[in-house]
Amino acid sequence: MWFVPLWGFAAHVIPAFPFHLSIRAARTEPTEDDRKELIIDLTHQKLYALDQGVLIHTIPVSTGVSPKWVTPTGIFWIYRRVRDDHMVGGQPGTPDHWDVDHVPYAQYFYGGIAIHGAWWNHRFGVPKSHGCIQVPTDKSPQGPTGQPADAEWLWQFAQVGTPVIIMGKTPPTPTTKPLPYPSPSPLGPTSARFGASLIR
Figure 1 (tube, rainbow, N blue to C red):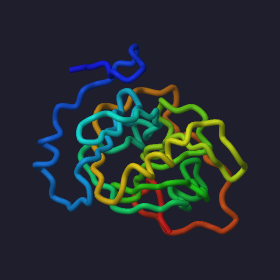
Figure 2: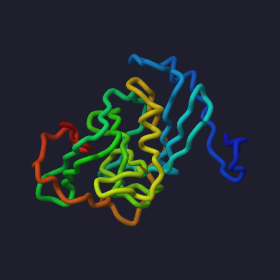
Figure 3: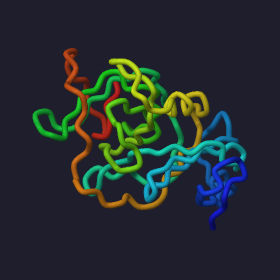
Figure 4: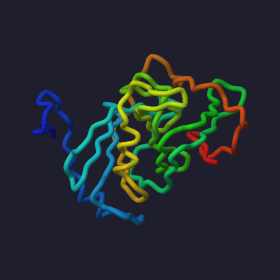
């Protein structure tokens, strides 16, 4: 099922999500606000923010790279939020290792996997991560990025307990390797959790 929103972009067609009641009926974890939901469409690399079932914002994302770093599908809930995070993961000494300071607006929903701003990513809409959901952010440690402030918008919109529904299939990419991250932090690594993002 598809519909065209009535507010503006008449040529922009988005999928309709007819399963809101089943998500609430299946809830097994507490939430502070059932009116808001985040739906991530892996196939189209989009995040849809809904309030009371009404689409209010669409954001291009970069999810996990197939086959090794695929973002999990299912229904999750945000359980932890960190405004300015330090993420470390992968195997040290390999191309899959990362150590990134100042990851903005991290909202964890499954182990070490989060929705977060990615100031090092300059092309969203294609898989590029180690499993996290990267969204545009307008600030980096070096200054403005030229991207929209979507990560900050999501930080204001969501909260602990907001449902995160991930569906679809990761599209093929020319490479099976995630986007390289900035140089490692001089502070040194922190301990690993799950392999998608590390939390300190």
